[in-house]
Amino acid sequence: MQSPFWKGFRTGLPVCLGYVPVAFAFAVSMAGRLPWQVILLVSVTNFTSAGQAAGSNLMAGGAPLPEIGVTVLLINVRYMLMSLSLSQKMQRIPWYKRLIMANGITDEVFFLAAQQPGQLSCRFFFGLALGPYMGWVGGTLGGILLGSVLPAALTSALGIALYAMFIAIMIPPARKDRPVLLAVLLAAALSCLLYYVPGLREIPAGWALIAAALAASLLAAWLWPHPEEQGAAV
Image (cartoon, rainbow, N blue to C red; front, side, top):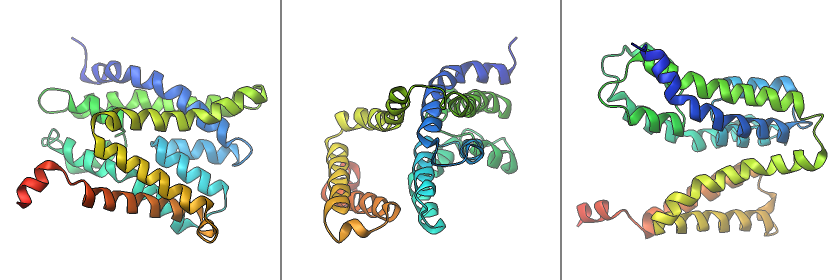
């Protein structure tokens, strides 16, 4: 009979393979902007693609620590909600183990863990998260080692891969839910205003991202409330 750890590892193996090229692209995009030791350390200690990319870009641009911290916090705040959701399937696990397990939660790991029937075991989740983590760190290390020897045209193309990943994440919910699409377009429009309008473009990139995200979220919640919430209010 297969152990829970290896069952979890096999479940997360497709995510591991999917993380390798994204992490590789991240390392290549940061080459020359941050020391390779910092790039690797960021991937080892931050298991988040979007937050990691945003934070690294701000670090490379010399942004102050509060700006970096608030930006990464807002981008990664969804993991708090995911952790709360999965805690319902971890009621038999001690709290200190849950704190360790929370560091392995990503969007894909959360989805796979949430699909498991019944309560989650500690060994299964550690196996589930280990594969994707190895893929992320391994992909970053591969990008550091091979990025300097790849042709310039290829490294430039890999730099775009991160933005393509973000677009791929947004498209499915935007196609299913019109308010989500409008919120995304609103955030993009606000970002363009903060980047191109004289005076506004003087705002640091991190604070501009925070302002655009918060403003778009608040306006979307006000203009297009969720039907259940609207019905409850009535």
